[in-house]
Length: 292
Image 1: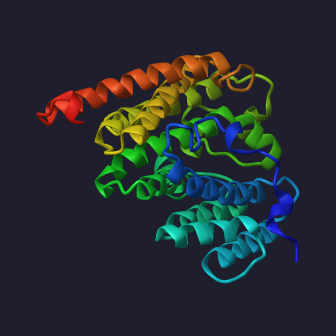
Image 2 (image 1 turned 90 degrees about the vertical axis):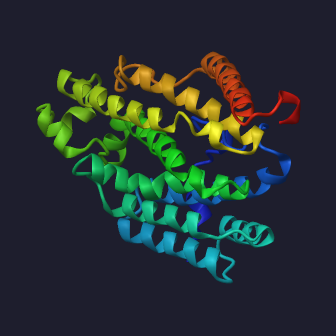
């Protein structure tokens, strides 16, 4: 039987658009977060593989699930996560929710409307943040803001890669009703430059993603762990800048990712913003800064 890890692309946590277990995260938490990442990356690479059949993808994803929840040894990534979760007394629910999204990726190529897309994000994005919050022992009261941020990050990624996803995987995350309302055909995603209709779709979705980011704005200030709160503030700042880029650039012909200078600059802004939110929280709670 083919091992899931044979389909890894070689992409690692340092290649992602947003920080994964950065040095802001305490060392005691980074191991389990990176084990989670490696498991998810393996599943993602299977779901996005250009030549595997849908049936083979489901078979491999089911194997990962079995190794995560049982006693199998077929996937080193699943075994490592299973052991890391057991050592910390954490549930596998978030990893298994992500597997539901990857099964959808193997079989579902289109999304009818915004609610359909958000339903996908419920499994493809929100569990990532929920897992990190659980690792840090944060309250589940933080979940709604987390879910808004994670859904926004997922949709940003969809918009950045809309042309590549269509050309390589025949997968379209832009909701069909938005395409219809702007008179845009699916084939326009395969062009070298976005048509006016496709640009209108992207602008509209960027606007709705911006609304999600407004909902997630209080998230960092609601987190008890200071270092995690700062990381979330950085991610929020990155996401807001990317939405601005998507609101004025064409992802088919222009760069809509942050370069190294942008990452550094907006990372500093995010840290400053997160720190100011933390100070505001301290004073709101009636404490002196040195008591925080």
